[in-house]
Length: 436
Image (cartoon, rainbow, N blue to C red):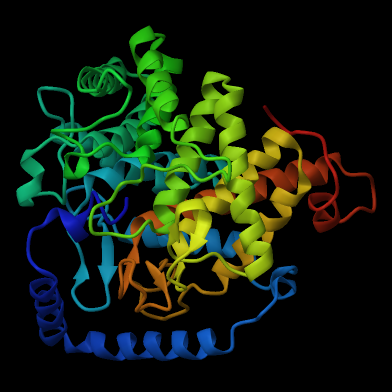
């Protein structure tokens, strides 16, 4: 989920009207004023005193298992009565309505957590979410844009359908029902049917009617579907889109074509492009895609090491823009670096990821208020320009993914390490690829 396809920009009201709506929400629930002021104050202090070097994050201060548990619990609390997951919790207006897109790609995260921990509650939430998504599928096979019951929800959305497809495929793997596969195939068929001959998606169903390279995430979902359906149509649609995306890759690693009119290229979008290309490349066994993702991810790793943070926005060739932190983008890049470690065996990727995870862990709110504890802010500080004053469900999803990847890889390294070698020593030493 991101600013373009979501609640922030699907609606038509002006910025002033949206600001008024948020302010009215705070007036209606004045008890939110105290947590809001507390969060603003804590971010102001921590931002002013933030460490200027990465050594501060080289040792674990906050156990990943504890943070992971709090992230999942936050997601579980964000499930609405209808079964969908709220897009966000606003410090001003509270929980949003259910959002189909993010509900879709949270489903694999919940099943991954259940497999890791045996948590039955996560399975229950995933199953309710899946059934709710079934009720939203259109006769075409596509899924609606926007928040549930919003004006945008009458139109099918390519990006939302692609992210929901991730959940449908995973539901099929878990349930092994004919209905789950049928619904996933219908979504994939619709995506293939509205794809342009050049492999992009534009026009009706695409945000602002334009083609976007971050729709590589849709290609990833189609590649997952093809692995289960065995249907060439789905595999070809994934490959065609990746071909189109790779045509926008520059020598610097930057992939052009994020193409958001009126919005900067937030790190969240940059990471979307890279993650979709990488995961699709792995599934489709495409070295060209993996190498393109590697170039882009390496450029951001060098930025992280040099500047001790990643910027909230980037311009062409990774020229930094706004200096706030986009925490979701940070979590996504941690996922990408960990996956590239698995593919390449380059320990510099896991080294950077461990530091990034520790950095993000230390920025999560610690509060007795249930709606806040375990939430991931859109921006750090909380007033940054990406989803300001909100804890966002897709931020919790991607950070949970990063911590689960971290734990799995570290456990594998620990098992493989010689007696007496610590987990951190194993993680930061040269190692052969875990997977390809």
